[in-house]
Image (tube, rainbow, N blue to C red; front, side):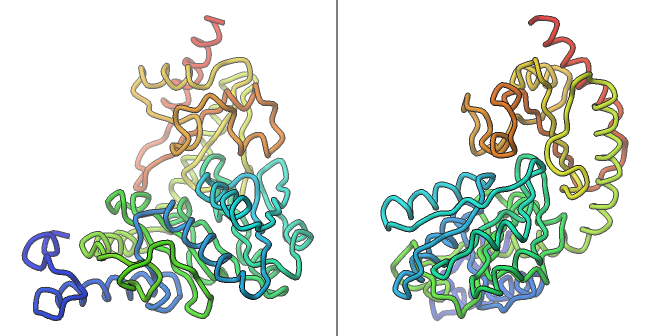
Length: 359
């Protein structure tokens, strides 16, 4: 990033040496991202992160379809808040009908369930490639085939998947990634959306990003994003395989050590570095505090809903009782795992026991 924060700190829309150097770096970053996604350079829009990208994809593609009489959106009840809030906005202010296709107890959306939700006026299907709370991974290619058979584009929220799962060859017409999930700075991200799709921009002005996001681009952030994604993709298969081995051993250790503990999400089709549990009878937030006292930082759900006392909407959609859903604890592990997690599993058991003894 450094050259584009100092010497080449130019506006890429300006026609002078500094601006043209910035423009060249921006387009190089765009091309590198597109190559990894199996899309065209012109399909890549640099954004401020996953929330903006999801908003732009869902609102932009649905609003762009309204003139053709397409006023129906399909998603699921387990999506990130940025997806659900965008759907709610379209329903409230633009009379768009929203169908929440049902998922099973593992958080999986079957192709049959998606097919049943589609209509002749469906403008878009928006699904999370991998769930941000329970880690369930969808069969994106199968869902894309179902949507495309009805002439409906598919948007994949791939924020959690980037760096862990393949991003090309999925059949997605639009795809979202957040920079901070792959080691780029917070506040960076992309929306890759096929150029043939009509998209109404959220930001209007000078027409930057091929008219899909006006405003002076963050050149240094784009360069950082492309570099991080390139590195993450190069290391993805080895990192994912190793993390999955540690994850499986950790899951086994926790379930063996904590009576009544239950794994949430799909037991097999899940992110390599995510393990999520409910511990019925104890308070999940209190378990988090006990774990932090032991030097372990974890989460009770989505960071974007931090501070909420409500049970996770994801777990409720999976059919969990609200009281059990409030006991959720989620563990995510870094790339380049080098040691097993036996000590962490023991600490989880100790924390749950300590919390339970107070009850």
